[in-house]
Length: 636
Image (tube, rainbow, N blue to C red; front, side, top):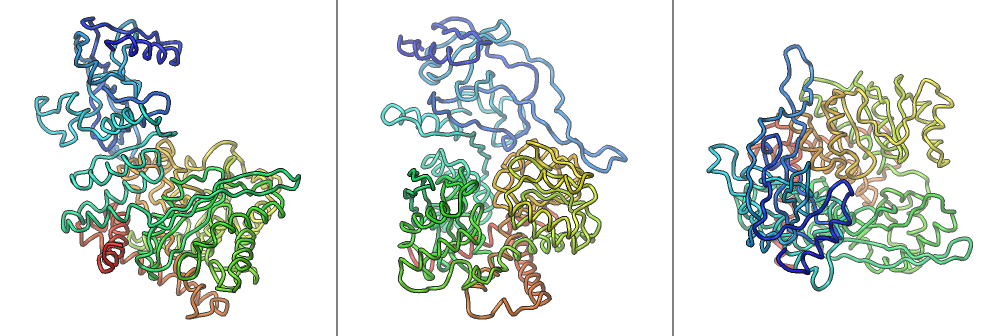
């Protein structure tokens, strides 16, 4: 601020901002308004969104306006459901006019002064907001104002401020890491847990999806770390994958043009056994998503009856619109690099988004050709050549069985419940099928363009039609031609439809904060996660405050993990099972996982009726299984 270079930098920043704001650079001693507008401080740090550092301006935060957030009101008399209302505005605070001091220029050299409503104010270059406080004291909201931390001390102790300063220094030499989306950071009670999260933020600040799933697990493990500090070092080791492979995938299309995509495989942990985990082919695929998928799979496998290692990966290749020959050439090129890291005793991949029997067949064919011998196929010996696998069917059926277990604890059943399902892949279709057989009324499916609503509910004939539409790669809109009472909503999600239970089965973070509010207002009381991490952290907060019970994917999808391992083993031939035997075995697996999660949760103080019990119990149980193996095997 007190140098010509800083002034020029700020003026350049001003030109890049919206034309409705006129940027001014204040000299030392000029008077400015530091007061915020109407409203009170945020009720808690856990509901405050911290904004990530953008690529254009490496900055440290100053102060942020109190956010006007939606809060949940208590139920009104005679009202069946809690409603979401805006927080009442407090009295307007008295203006505080201070002088722009020299120490501010040193501490907040990335802050700037802007004119807002004819008043010059100090703005934070990170959050682009003005005000004296970002939030209340993170150590508690009780007591008088002199117990609150000062704005300067609060900023200097915040994770965001420390990370912004680090990025600020790093930018002088090698540029700033790319952060495309905000990072939502929650407050942690335990200092050691906070330090673990800080180290992840410091090491990989741009890996938003990975940071998000790590936060949830670290939050669950706080009582574990209190009981045994040895687990702190185990968790630090676990959060770093054993190996992460990134490679290029060159391939030639049907016109003879060459293309290059990027391939990933992250083997997170082999402490419990060889890795198992999906491959995803989708344009959004990044290293952050590969790490998040691998970490989630490691915990999911540790929670399942069969103890396995976890891995994830894929490519930013998009199979949609590609010919069979192009997909085959890509899969062969992908396997040319990856095969050396695979094997039945090391890592075997499975299906995920964009990877089905066709892609897995091409991948396995090239793997067999390169290794020179048949070591067993991916996700099951000779499954794809027989045209049938029970793995995805077990995942979809298992979700419904898990929902029945939760409802049984509430003395309720699935029959007659309106159910909304997202996605239209094999998982979603199997969920629809089993919901229908249990007497529920599934009314929605969705794709990347919108969602389909059939108020009459899908029956077996309609589900068969949906499958044909997806096999032919047509739009769900074509369903309306055969069923005119149905409706297709473009560029929309199904979460605002009236329902009793929801099954997100599409992709990660498909439910954001507005979607969660819509779900609560639509009457949803139970959400069963079919896809990995389908809710953002902000959405999870809304659902928990509204007493919506969330069944985590780690536990709810355990059926697919267990049956997939049975397919790979020699202990039984699933093709000879009757439908009754298969469902009985699957229900038993889901019941074991459900009871194991609740038992672990109760051991660490989470009661059965706590909406977070299943999430925390599943995370703790999976971590302890991994931790015991890692301790026994030493520091490797």
